Image (cartoon, rainbow over all chains, first blue to last red; front, side):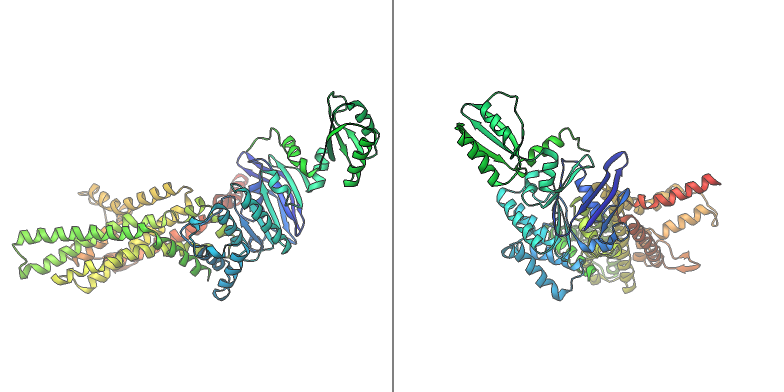
Length: 314
Length: 292
């Protein structure tokens, strides 16, 4: 468990982080979401003991980051937003170098490197110069580098930016594999959808302050209400609204006073509840043209846009 | 172990670059062509190499090649280390090194040695050219040894100052420029001061006189001049540390002292926010002075 307690970070007159407190559960894939300049990179660098907070504390279990930065750095694997590669080395040499400076003995080094190249599916590229690798491959190589000393926690700063859709899917799969290995992954991004599908928990940061944190479902419910449905009818929209209002599954009609054939409502419950709502409408001969449930997770982007609207980058 | 890994990586990166091969070729061509030009000129003046002139030609050729080598080292060596640390920061690999088991000492020593290996390779590559001198004679093994030591120490000082600049300054262009300015000052400060003070007789116990003596003892041109002329030119000896020292010995000792100081300063400025680490101490001093 990582505990962040009331941290502030100031760069001269700029307040990069302000009174930010957060808990990151062990084994979670934790997403830090916020617009550019929100303070995500600063927070990751503090977590990695690369810069100290101006005030506040960060605990990795029983160890405080500023008190024992070297011990903490042994436990984390950090991947900056810019991959940080040496283009004139081969993939194997690149990993061997990092294995060496992490104190892995020469005898074990080649095995560790071979295993990691296999994990990130780059065995066929072991003798290729890093500069000849695609961006997706370089990113996987950097992830392998971050894993070289078998850290408990991975800090990944905007890892999927600039990747094509296929590379993103592959990267997502890789993160799930790592979660399966018991690693805690803290991942930052300004693209919410990138994280929504893989993160178990998220924190939304705006202008250095925490807006909301918790389980993905919880955050969306807290900020934007529950799940929604959108029903389009051919006619009898007023009857349909009245019917929906009376149903136990519908908690709120969002556009009750608007004219038109589209009805939006918040509902609670699972697929059974959705089925009951649709069946009720059909039973009353409401001419339904389309019936579109929208889960809270699917609406995360809207929620994010609304709460980060007008957030100025630092 | 961590130090070796860094050194291997640095050497791989540096020696794999095509520009290093070109650097050696241009370096040897410059030295070779200037040496060849000198021999042609000596041949034209003497109407063929006469026996009694050969040793003089050998000594003069050796002096010429040595000064060319010195200037080339001062001109090239800063480039090997002046971007060592801030270059890592620009590439965004510096944080990754900080997260490893590399100590500040190992990292800086690895960077310095790798940079110096490049400079030493240039010196080694020029040995066949220097060996031409032995056809003519006129150069003693002691002279060869002392000039070699001066070359190595010059490369070490210049390299360490480049490393210091790269830890102190954020931008690689600025640190490279600062290293070259230092090299120019180092080479030419003493000759300029001695020209300016020509004719003025400073008392030998004055502070200025002592400073100028130290500056002279640490000047590579003065040391090399004394070494290649074998006592017939330049300074005979320096009175430093209460000892009479040969110029190349004095130069080596002062250079070693400066190298150690610059290296220790590099360690201090190596980690992020070095000024920030001194702030509590400065605040404490400020509070003390306010109380008093």
